[in-house]
Figure 1 (cartoon, one colour):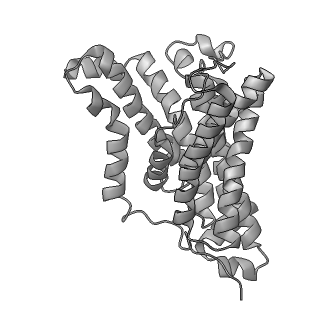
Figure 2: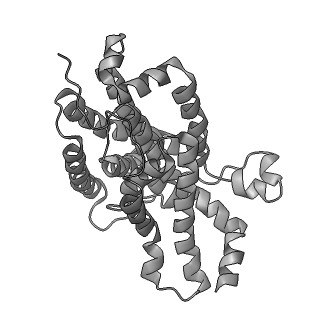
Length: 311
């Protein structure tokens, strides 16, 4: 069995699948890290991703363009994020409670809308994203099929690691964002609008989570399935903790969870002797271990989940 696993981990197909499966986790965790850096925790990641998945299908269904579908997915995620921001930032409602409510509401809403548009039994296939081979680079041995033959959402998501890493750590706006999450009173005293910063951070989270959700419906299946995100929003929360709110670390951790997903898929075909259901549960077991062992050790932003009410 160990020899089979060794060959699997060295295969191009397995590594390429790991990158693909890591994409939605990375997109959602990048957005969540920005939001938490500003002091707002979004347990509603699952709802944002699910609405993004449906928005992507509806956009592609009515326009015939996966790019329009991606835009609709981003807008759908931002709409859920806006509701989260209104209750969490403006009304100072408990952020976790709001997130749970939005997750439950998103499941019901997406189920109702999909059945209203597509019916109970019809499974409509829409135009999605296929592999996008980058000229010359995709022809390189090993690296070409691994990194430069992916779909457009994969390229966009990993490019965001560089963009957000630079903005967060190398710009004045990034410094202000981190200040709001660490000490909002001090940030407000130097003229930074805590409310505006938190709203923008949550909306960015919604946009990236909507993009992450569109991966399921526009890359993997080209259709919408009820609750198709399968709890990936909660795994993304674990990725944020392990990655310590740093974009490049999030990419590595998301890739690790993506490998667990790929392992579950490929190991079934290899018949390595492990129960099928155990293989499918690997990403969730990994997230459970993170919550059990690392949450208490990681240091979140000091003002995380604390409402800001200026005197």
